[in-house]
Length: 425
Ligand code: BJ8
Image (cartoon, rainbow, N blue to C red):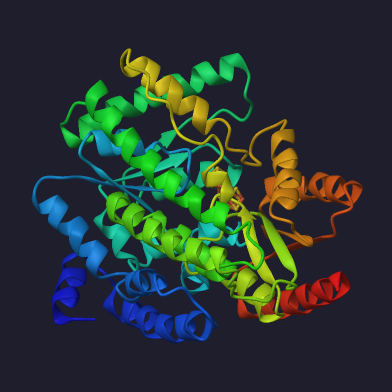
């Protein structure tokens, strides 16, 4: 990374010693997991470049945005309405929580028995390791799981943190509550940015995100083909990058990737033989750089063909947001109605998630499902019981796993995944 970036990180008050250690380790990990794959689409060059610049180019864009008076908002959940932030001239970035590297730092102020995602993310902030955290003017939390809910109170002591009150059910009253929360959020974003969220601006921002969602949906549709035109590892990387790259650039590059995949599908060209076992992932999100599960699956010769997760199809549930022409309230209601179809395990009841997993297993012709929850994530771990019962009833083999980001865990998961895929043969 260039000296220009080093000066930028120092200005952002990054702990350079720890940051150098992280940046020193990442290229080797990426090379080992990603660059050795065979038959990668050429268009993956863009995403590889984004990873090579992970704390460089995009952070520079955010800093330049701030120098012009713009604001940056960090978020951890797909329920945070990026449309509103874009409409007010802000930039939203999904903050990472996928590295074991920062987990022990998070444990300095958090209990050990908390999911790895939360500990990793908080460790990035309190250790001053992540420039995205350092550049953010406001962090947006949500009341999804108990772990996150209580963490926001602690995180607020390190960086201003605003919390959206997401209901845990979907009754009419809950819907009304969420719409009122979206309105409250509009007020907060207007206050921070100094810009008004008008119906016109919100419609434009919604259209930008609809186009991004359409490109991602196209990618997932292409993954239904046999043989699979892209590895699960590569598809996951594209989704992970969607959380922090510029949405217009990301949409264009993802459509270019899809053009190439379409040609592959027409030529019946795949990254694995047509007979390779097809695995559907279901469970907790896999934030960058948590690549362990697809890597272990695909190292057996199987291919991960979709992810029922917020770093996968759950991002796309609800499809396009309708853009009603009759004012801000109607637009916010339309955003709420799309969002409330996202089947986070924090909701109860959550039968729609189980139906969705069954549907995905069928539509993507999955030979088996790997359900993975981060340890101490009660909602997903508990829901795994009903998910596996439903899959077994439908005759779909399922492996239920839980774990964290550590190397030790990866060793154990490797044995279990290998044995499961062998049973599918
Ligand atoms: S909508 S899945 S992005 S909350 S793994 S922190 S749930 S203890 S991430 Fe999520 Fe929004 Fe739901 Fe999606 Fe808690 Fe579980 Fe940790 Fe989790």
